Length: 229
Image (tube, rainbow, N blue to C red):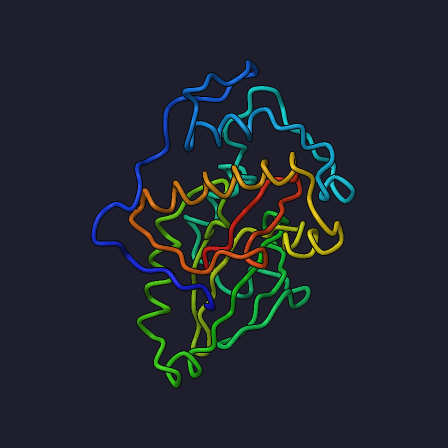
Protein backbone atom coordinates (compact mmCIF):
# COMPACT_ATOMS: atom_id res chain seq x y z
CA UNK A 1 0.00 0.00 0.00
CA UNK A 2 2.96 2.29 -0.63
CA UNK A 3 1.24 3.98 -3.59
CA UNK A 4 -0.67 7.15 -2.84
CA UNK A 5 -3.83 7.98 -4.72
CA UNK A 6 -6.75 10.28 -3.99
CA UNK A 7 -10.04 11.35 -5.52
CA UNK A 8 -9.95 14.64 -7.42
CA UNK A 9 -12.70 17.19 -6.89
CA UNK A 10 -13.34 17.18 -10.63
CA UNK A 11 -12.12 15.18 -13.60
CA UNK A 12 -8.35 15.52 -13.95
CA UNK A 13 -8.44 14.62 -17.64
CA UNK A 14 -10.73 13.66 -20.47
CA UNK A 15 -11.75 10.09 -21.13
CA UNK A 16 -10.07 7.89 -23.76
CA UNK A 17 -10.30 9.27 -27.25
CA UNK A 18 -12.16 7.44 -29.97
CA UNK A 19 -9.57 7.94 -32.68
CA UNK A 20 -7.47 4.83 -33.30
CA UNK A 21 -3.89 4.60 -34.49
CA UNK A 22 -3.26 3.48 -38.07
CA UNK A 23 -0.30 2.24 -40.03
CA UNK A 24 -0.07 5.49 -41.99
CA UNK A 25 2.20 8.36 -40.95
CA UNK A 26 0.61 10.68 -38.37
CA UNK A 27 -0.48 14.10 -39.54
CA UNK A 28 0.87 17.18 -37.74
CA UNK A 29 -2.51 17.40 -36.00
CA UNK A 30 -1.91 14.15 -34.11
CA UNK A 31 -0.93 15.08 -30.55
CA UNK A 32 -1.61 14.30 -26.90
CA UNK A 33 -3.14 10.89 -26.28
CA UNK A 34 -3.82 10.54 -30.01
CA UNK A 35 -0.05 10.58 -30.54
CA UNK A 36 0.35 8.04 -27.72
CA UNK A 37 -2.14 5.73 -29.41
CA UNK A 38 -0.34 6.06 -32.71
CA UNK A 39 2.97 5.25 -31.01
CA UNK A 40 1.60 2.09 -29.38
CA UNK A 41 0.08 1.00 -32.69
CA UNK A 42 3.17 1.47 -34.83
CA UNK A 43 6.31 1.53 -32.66
CA UNK A 44 9.02 -0.94 -33.75
CA UNK A 45 9.52 -2.63 -30.37
CA UNK A 46 11.62 -5.59 -31.51
CA UNK A 47 14.53 -4.03 -29.64
CA UNK A 48 12.65 -3.92 -26.35
CA UNK A 49 14.62 -5.28 -23.38
CA UNK A 50 11.59 -7.45 -22.67
CA UNK A 51 12.00 -9.13 -26.06
CA UNK A 52 15.05 -10.99 -24.78
CA UNK A 53 12.85 -12.67 -22.18
CA UNK A 54 9.45 -12.80 -23.84
CA UNK A 55 8.11 -13.25 -27.34
CA UNK A 56 7.21 -9.64 -28.04
CA UNK A 57 4.92 -8.97 -30.99
CA UNK A 58 2.82 -5.91 -31.76
CA UNK A 59 0.10 -6.70 -34.34
CA UNK A 60 -0.44 -4.03 -37.04
CA UNK A 61 -3.10 -1.51 -36.15
CA UNK A 62 -3.09 -2.34 -32.44
CA UNK A 63 -4.59 0.44 -30.33
CA UNK A 64 -5.11 -1.14 -26.92
CA UNK A 65 -3.86 -4.66 -26.13
CA UNK A 66 -6.08 -7.30 -24.58
CA UNK A 67 -6.30 -7.22 -20.80
CA UNK A 68 -4.63 -10.63 -20.62
CA UNK A 69 -7.39 -12.59 -18.87
CA UNK A 70 -10.32 -14.31 -20.54
CA UNK A 71 -13.90 -13.22 -19.74
CA UNK A 72 -14.69 -16.79 -18.66
CA UNK A 73 -11.96 -16.84 -16.00
CA UNK A 74 -12.81 -13.31 -14.87
CA UNK A 75 -16.45 -14.33 -14.46
CA UNK A 76 -15.42 -17.20 -12.17
CA UNK A 77 -13.56 -14.78 -9.92
CA UNK A 78 -16.41 -12.29 -9.87
CA UNK A 79 -19.24 -14.76 -9.26
CA UNK A 80 -17.54 -17.16 -6.84
CA UNK A 81 -17.24 -16.91 -3.07
CA UNK A 82 -13.50 -17.30 -2.72
CA UNK A 83 -11.25 -18.20 0.18
CA UNK A 84 -7.56 -18.92 0.57
CA UNK A 85 -8.36 -22.62 0.17
CA UNK A 86 -9.19 -21.96 -3.51
CA UNK A 87 -5.54 -21.10 -4.23
CA UNK A 88 -2.19 -22.85 -4.08
CA UNK A 89 0.38 -20.42 -2.68
CA UNK A 90 3.78 -20.74 -4.38
CA UNK A 91 6.19 -18.05 -3.21
CA UNK A 92 6.54 -14.48 -2.00
CA UNK A 93 6.83 -11.86 -4.72
CA UNK A 94 7.34 -8.91 -2.39
CA UNK A 95 6.77 -7.53 1.09
CA UNK A 96 5.32 -4.30 2.44
CA UNK A 97 4.40 -2.48 5.63
CA UNK A 98 1.20 -4.43 6.20
CA UNK A 99 1.88 -7.80 4.64
CA UNK A 100 3.18 -9.42 1.47
CA UNK A 101 2.33 -10.26 -2.14
CA UNK A 102 2.19 -13.97 -2.95
CA UNK A 103 2.33 -15.79 -6.27
CA UNK A 104 -0.59 -18.21 -6.33
CA UNK A 105 -2.50 -20.50 -8.66
CA UNK A 106 -6.27 -20.68 -8.72
CA UNK A 107 -7.06 -24.37 -8.30
CA UNK A 108 -10.20 -24.42 -10.44
CA UNK A 109 -8.84 -22.55 -13.48
CA UNK A 110 -5.06 -23.10 -13.05
CA UNK A 111 -4.76 -19.35 -13.59
CA UNK A 112 -1.77 -17.60 -12.02
CA UNK A 113 -2.46 -14.57 -9.85
CA UNK A 114 -0.72 -12.28 -7.37
CA UNK A 115 -2.44 -12.15 -3.99
CA UNK A 116 -1.79 -9.10 -1.83
CA UNK A 117 -2.17 -10.18 1.80
CA UNK A 118 -2.79 -7.39 4.33
CA UNK A 119 -2.62 -8.24 8.03
CA UNK A 120 -5.62 -6.74 9.80
CA UNK A 121 -3.78 -6.20 13.09
CA UNK A 122 -1.08 -4.13 11.37
CA UNK A 123 -3.62 -2.16 9.35
CA UNK A 124 -5.49 -1.26 12.55
CA UNK A 125 -2.32 -0.58 14.57
CA UNK A 126 -1.02 1.86 11.95
CA UNK A 127 -4.46 3.49 11.60
CA UNK A 128 -4.77 2.57 7.94
CA UNK A 129 -8.29 1.08 7.97
CA UNK A 130 -9.78 3.84 5.81
CA UNK A 131 -6.79 3.68 3.49
CA UNK A 132 -7.31 -0.07 2.99
CA UNK A 133 -11.01 0.42 2.28
CA UNK A 134 -10.25 3.19 -0.19
CA UNK A 135 -7.58 1.14 -1.93
CA UNK A 136 -10.05 -1.67 -2.56
CA UNK A 137 -12.70 0.80 -3.74
CA UNK A 138 -10.34 2.39 -6.26
CA UNK A 139 -9.10 -0.97 -7.55
CA UNK A 140 -12.72 -2.04 -8.01
CA UNK A 141 -13.25 0.92 -10.33
CA UNK A 142 -10.16 0.40 -12.49
CA UNK A 143 -10.47 -1.83 -15.57
CA UNK A 144 -7.64 -0.93 -17.91
CA UNK A 145 -5.20 -3.06 -19.98
CA UNK A 146 -2.31 -0.82 -18.88
CA UNK A 147 -3.03 -1.21 -15.15
CA UNK A 148 -2.75 -4.26 -12.88
CA UNK A 149 -6.43 -5.10 -12.39
CA UNK A 150 -8.17 -6.41 -9.29
CA UNK A 151 -9.77 -9.80 -9.95
CA UNK A 152 -11.35 -10.53 -6.57
CA UNK A 153 -11.36 -9.66 -2.87
CA UNK A 154 -11.98 -11.77 0.23
CA UNK A 155 -10.99 -11.85 3.89
CA UNK A 156 -10.71 -14.08 6.92
CA UNK A 157 -10.22 -13.44 10.64
CA UNK A 158 -6.58 -12.36 10.23
CA UNK A 159 -6.08 -10.98 6.74
CA UNK A 160 -7.49 -9.07 3.80
CA UNK A 161 -6.78 -10.59 0.37
CA UNK A 162 -6.62 -8.67 -2.91
CA UNK A 163 -6.41 -11.02 -5.90
CA UNK A 164 -4.56 -9.21 -8.69
CA UNK A 165 -3.34 -10.00 -12.18
CA UNK A 166 0.08 -11.63 -12.15
CA UNK A 167 2.50 -9.70 -14.37
CA UNK A 168 5.36 -12.12 -14.94
CA UNK A 169 7.76 -9.75 -16.68
CA UNK A 170 8.61 -7.97 -13.44
CA UNK A 171 9.49 -4.35 -12.88
CA UNK A 172 10.55 -2.01 -15.65
CA UNK A 173 13.31 -0.90 -13.29
CA UNK A 174 14.91 -4.35 -13.58
CA UNK A 175 14.83 -4.30 -17.38
CA UNK A 176 16.14 -0.73 -17.46
CA UNK A 177 19.00 -1.60 -15.12
CA UNK A 178 19.99 -4.58 -17.25
CA UNK A 179 19.75 -2.61 -20.51
CA UNK A 180 21.58 0.43 -19.14
CA UNK A 181 19.35 2.62 -21.26
CA UNK A 182 16.39 2.09 -23.57
CA UNK A 183 16.55 2.94 -27.25
CA UNK A 184 14.51 5.93 -28.38
CA UNK A 185 11.91 3.60 -29.92
CA UNK A 186 11.48 1.56 -26.74
CA UNK A 187 11.36 4.68 -24.57
CA UNK A 188 8.68 6.23 -26.80
CA UNK A 189 6.68 3.01 -26.78
CA UNK A 190 6.56 2.70 -23.00
CA UNK A 191 6.08 6.46 -22.50
CA UNK A 192 3.02 6.23 -24.77
CA UNK A 193 1.58 3.38 -22.71
CA UNK A 194 2.17 5.38 -19.51
CA UNK A 195 0.25 8.27 -21.08
CA UNK A 196 -2.67 5.98 -21.95
CA UNK A 197 -2.69 4.44 -18.46
CA UNK A 198 -2.79 7.84 -16.80
CA UNK A 199 -5.37 9.14 -19.26
CA UNK A 200 -7.64 6.34 -18.05
CA UNK A 201 -6.80 6.85 -14.36
CA UNK A 202 -7.50 10.59 -14.61
CA UNK A 203 -10.76 9.91 -16.46
CA UNK A 204 -11.87 8.10 -13.26
CA UNK A 205 -11.05 11.22 -11.20
CA UNK A 206 -8.14 9.44 -9.52
CA UNK A 207 -4.84 11.12 -8.70
CA UNK A 208 -1.84 8.75 -8.64
CA UNK A 209 1.27 10.03 -6.86
CA UNK A 210 3.79 7.22 -7.05
CA UNK A 211 4.89 6.98 -10.68
CA UNK A 212 8.36 5.40 -10.93
CA UNK A 213 9.99 2.49 -12.83
CA UNK A 214 9.55 0.20 -9.81
CA UNK A 215 5.76 0.56 -10.13
CA UNK A 216 5.67 -0.13 -13.88
CA UNK A 217 5.55 -3.83 -14.73
CA UNK A 218 6.14 -5.56 -18.07
CA UNK A 219 3.60 -8.20 -19.08
CA UNK A 220 4.40 -11.44 -20.91
CA UNK A 221 3.50 -9.78 -24.24
CA UNK A 222 5.89 -6.90 -23.56
CA UNK A 223 3.19 -4.36 -22.74
CA UNK A 224 3.25 -2.15 -19.69
CA UNK A 225 1.02 -2.56 -16.63
CA UNK A 226 1.15 0.01 -13.83
CA UNK A 227 0.71 -0.95 -10.20
CA UNK A 228 -2.33 0.88 -8.89
CA UNK A 229 -1.90 -0.49 -5.35
